[in-house]
Length: 324
Image (cartoon, rainbow, N blue to C red):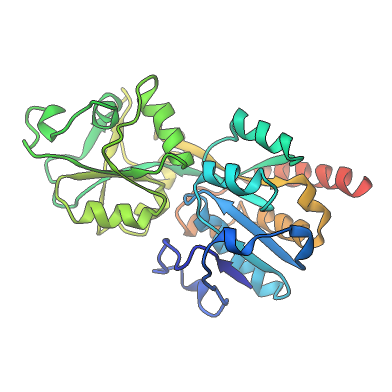
């Protein structure tokens, strides 16, 4: 069975009716149910990115239909929080990640004898959203996004463009433990710091509700959460110097939606691959990264060649693990 250990999933069911009947259960939190992995039979524990969560959840649900003897527990902790609090200390088997593993994460993993194996699983179009009633804005430049989100930046929309409303902006965005936060800072803010006077959360549905509730709000998150809520929030086109481009699966796949298209990852603890249930789950996951399961939750699937490269890498690692 598959369960989300953070309580009711923040990625609402909506069109993803596949969860019905799969036995998704709530618990107090990942830290309350994760102990020594060697003492648990047939369980796969996953933490990390809320952006990657929908992909992992839909694939886990499909896996659970075939393997009712294996429990897959998924927690949304943010990429960084997943690495530092669970994966690198050896408490989880897999970390969902919306950025590449950082040097500090690698060092922490190494100190604890955890070897992370990286697999790309999809492409995302990180999406900036405003209230649907904000009919005065459809497109922003990268420079304007910097002015909106840098520390000490715009307080009112008219601070960015004179013709925009002289109204105070309410900001909603990713928490500092999030890979989405890290990616946004790197691509949009550069040497500037991210503003701190904003509603920071790992719950992307909270961002949807916040922006929906204020005509002058702005927020950002992974494309899947916009794709599920196109009536509640409005996605902005991004102009990186070559004209305005809307976020979509097509523009992300074509490399046109820049600079906010990004790869998404899972990191697997090599040591966990000694357990058959983890091996089976990871193989099942990787085999489906080129399918419509990924597309259906709002991300660009891998090509078949990319999928096969992942599987070859996985089998090579597996040979090393099983030969030890």
